[in-house]
Length: 637
Image 1 (cartoon, rainbow, N blue to C red):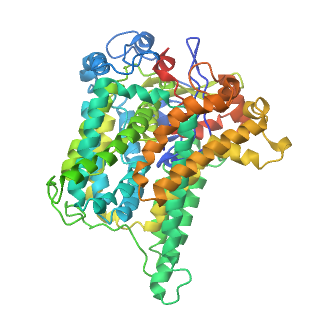
Image 2: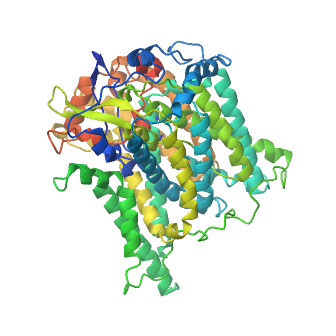
Image 3: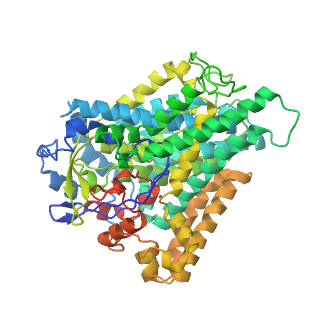
């Protein structure tokens, strides 16, 4: 696969008890990707990263040896050659592993400051993207789903997941792919002559039922079939879509070529474009504040972690400067203060049969199935990226049970008319990172890398950030001050960030270089260049096919199916076109297909380090393309 929001490729090599961690490829993407590369470093004071001090990592909460609990835990995903269909086996094993630890999840954290800091951080990096996608959703659904519904949904599903999920460190929210899918499926109501919210009710019911059934029979295992070929295309599709949608909403209202437009209205639209461009520039600049020579490490960390929030505050302040006429400037369209009523003229509880025919009820199964296909990839990749070996988590994963709980979250969304959400990329992995105690160790290159020594594995931070969404609902007057241009500027920033570090984009740039200027990395030196060009061209064609269908056709809601189809295309078609040796370089998948040291050397060549003593890859955010289909066996053995 996420993603998700947005930066260069990332890998880490950390030795732990003579074991080398799984290779990873990191890019930047979603949404708050920008908000937080070194985000968790906000708790640097308490975690003593700068001083290389640490407390000995305690045993796991149930008293078992930490290393043993990580490597010997049982799960339905514990082997790569396991049968795909196993009724209730995965859920049973997940519950057997996590249920004894449930009480400990609610125990007092070792560092309350770390948990509080992670809670506030997770809230901020989720709220800003939620506002962006809400604005996008409001346009596509004719204001039926807007800011109120998106923020309330983040609160409701976040609370359910924090209390009942097996792995509560994964935080839930509304993502860019969900906003795109809801926008494209909105047109189906006209085809079935149905009222929107009853139709939406059945979309959620069908989707939730598919999630619950698939988790019971073991279909969650399908996510391990995804390779970088698909995840890179998914990431590039999100980036291109974000850039297109942001530019459309910043430029289209300018009334170019029209003379009979009110001057104040035209001035307001140009002001929106200017503020959006400025927001994008500030966010992108602060994204790299961690590499600056100015200020202390703590100050630079704050600037990098909260770059999108800082950009919104600055641009909102500029929009209120006295003496500057910005014409009729559009701001976030919400009722302030909020009256706790839906945006559309309706009641909170949906009547599922109002204006619905039998054809419409069963027709809603199609977009419901698209949600299932989207979430079986996006949510599980978010969960997997949040539980990578480098975080040294002591409590087991629960992929099947968590997907079951995700299906349950569709029920309140159906009843209340709220957009469904899933595990966030990169916010969920960044939330885990914010809960870590870390130290810096020099690798064999002399570059300092972070090593996790302890993680606060609890439910309080996930629950707390969801509850803070109710604070955001009560603060709608403040949110209403934000210019719409600022949100579209952030969407543009997220799109640009998704390109930066995407391997398809990198190889496309290399194709435009003269041969001697290309970086001497394995994919350049060990693979015939015509082979690289062909593979890249296939990926680009697939990306723009998905992008075109999603944004310019009446069946745009089927784009998740197109992404899923890429998996068998890679397995059964590309494997016949390209040699196995070439695919090891172009599309490494599974254990042993990519050498860790080679990857690090490659990234040092591609992304020149700005500081020889600090690993510049630490600035990157986790996203879908980091998932390499390595399988649970590789992750935990």
